Image (cartoon, rainbow, N blue to C red):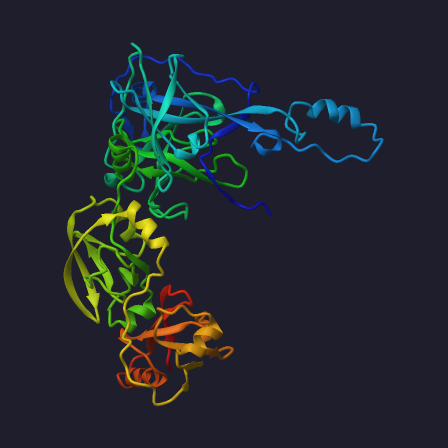
Length: 504
């Protein structure tokens, strides 16, 4: 069975000199809304004519050595004295099959579009121009201009280029509002599939808010408009010629279109483009928390009627909310007036917020909704801070010595966290709580992936420091009629996570 592959909508890579770029001349722009028949648009000719001049082909070249390049083909190993030896020696000469071979040029073809005719600003995908030595922009009238890189963002796969028109009049298109697009709306894709030049395809919005696990802010528009290799970076238009998406990926078992393509929505892309134009880099908002999904079990443990929001699993030391404004165990259900339906909504909403902005955050803390105000930091600064710390929040370290040294509960054996157990399980000195020394096979704890050496820091949002604390908290939850126990666990290095364990 052929496996289905997720491909970046796929710049086409070529060895220099093996293919030509075909570009046609189009008429002057004329933005006219197409006539719609009962079964769809009667024609998109006027719409296509109005935007084709703004869609460009991106050609990049990169110098690679020997077999290191993406276009290199390894020399097959033949038996000594093979009659085919001379043939393969000639075929692979100067083609990268020899490790000692000299450098060669590798070319890639993609798509893009002009958003500012006066300044010569072109938008494309980051993966189209990544690692390129030279970038050229080819226009529909045959003009080719050298491009310089303004800025890139790997998290959203967006890049901004600049060309000098030198008296060449450019045609530009503008971003539209992707939030107004509905499933079933007609869209038109224009790009450079397989290096063929300006190609128009039409389809509908098949789905919205798609998460294809390509980055932290996945929120793709899915379309059945044909998108193929070389369409990367090309625009997806609405019915009035506005760009509501940047074509970037496809799902395909063969590398060709099967009607499942993905576009970065303009709502996300336009903000990134503005920041790249202004600063040459992104400047995203940063909350400084680690989060995980709110499952049905976790929601029940927290006394929530429905599973929604983002559960705060840890607060980053030195971050914007390290002052106790937001705490581990809080569930964020609304941020700056925007509902957080699921965990992946929060990073995107926060990132789109300006650095330094004071926002209201609606949280659920111990079953009670409350609003807190936080001031956002900058994500790019926070990433360095986050990578150098373990995500710990302060725990209660002032409790008395335990009444028992070990206890067995919910399939776990728990014990004191002292010098001996720290050394045995290599637990960091700033981790506090009750260490799990053993997990019974086929127990509720084992089903949740709990491992010996992890540390219970909280149960039902109450700190624990001794095995007796663990037993008391579990006993109290059972008396309250709770079916699940919500545990905050710390790894050996202090990374926090929440798990729920059935108690019945």
